[in-house]
Length: 146
Image (cartoon, rainbow, N blue to C red; front, side, top):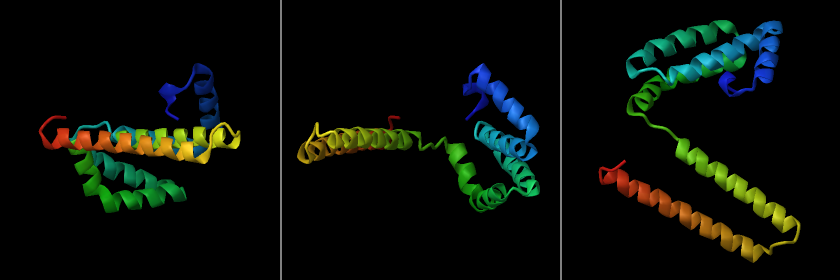
């Protein structure tokens, strides 16, 4: 979780944890630095990624060492994504809505409030709605509107 999204109580708890666990503090710092790279201007990203990769490699935390290798292999794509302002936020939001919807359906089916046919019909309506939204968005983008 990002520090600015935490309550004061949880910020204090996080700070205490980071003071007592050097490895955790290193991991948290690296995570925050990488997150901030995506807010930089496209001109600054390449150098910042290189600097981050050196820090990640030298920390010797296996997960970050692996991640820095992946970033090295996809650096051009990452820079292009930032330069062009591409984001998968809409897709992630849709996926989360589908998961939540699936959970609601499962709970209602388990409590015998719905039958499977009604649930399937509802799922199909949602999928049709999402598909039409995506198609409308595609038309807007190809038509020059964003």
